[in-house]
Amino acid sequence: MTLTPSDKALVPFVSVDHMLRLINQIGISNILKGLAEYIEADFKRWPDFDKTPRVASHSAEGVIELMPTSDGQTYGFKYVNGHPKNTREGLQTVTAFGLLADVYTGYPVLLSEMTLLTALRTAATSAMVAKHLAPKGATTMTMIGNGAQSEFQCLAFQAVCGIDTVRLYDIDANATAKAARNLAGTGLTVIPCTSPEQAIEGAQIITTCTADKQYATILTDNMVGAGVHINAIGGDCPGKTELHRDILLRSSIFVEYPEQTRIEGEIQQLEPDYPVTELWQVILGQKTGRTDDRQITLFDSVGFAIEDFSALRYIRDQIAIHPHYVDLDMLADPDDPRDLFGMVLRSKL
Image (tube, rainbow, N blue to C red; front, side, top):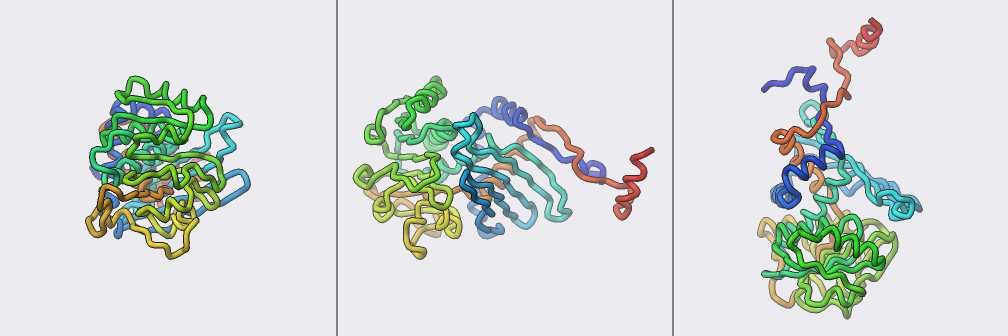
């Protein structure tokens, strides 16, 4: 169907309520698998995208960021914040919204909440990467940091990688109890733990996802044995890390976009030219991922705009099937494109 100028002035908007309806109708496992497929497809065409480190505004309280990219036909960006202190005030640490636009006209074609969608796409990215890097036949994951992201991570690894057991730890026992309660009935065996050492026992995959904006040592070098895959997603801004530096030196490190990860990821602890491998090259078979059973693989995840672009693409396709959205009248649409003022005059009639 060819859209008229009037149609193009209406922008589909997916609210939080709409996103919840999509999740419940499609199923969270199916959404996580679908997002992983879209993200992997866009990683396979990584060179087609404009790429830039996110534009960040840092403060003592947190960070506000814009994450833009384009594949030449569609432009996308996400607005996102990260304020760890917010939970003490009853607020979310992370909130977000995103937009897709048509490069040819510059007109927006989708506006969406991305607080829920970011949690979903982050988990889907983690699991998609682990599919390429984690030990074959991995069944158990440790989840250190049981905040807002933890259940999504566990379910994504179940859906995409086939894990059946998660071992949970958080310095706040209430957070662990919350995660265990939310994961009941998912088919996962859930084991709450009282220390990080206990949590990593028998795990082939270790995910760290803590929130404090500081250099931290969630995992010390002697805690990490040979052959594991580490999914480090908490170190995502300057001055914020989770792993001891010596773990990095023993690991094969894989990143999304080195120019961003060297500023924000675990590798900010290393020399600026320390060798890392870009994930898109592994997915395309240009570089090797896991090479032997004793290798420690580390996904130094900070989140990148292309993953948000993929997530917004997925949602745009899904609302064509499941119409959970409203049209927003957010673009001026004068009868004569050169007569915007006339539109103002006619509005008085």
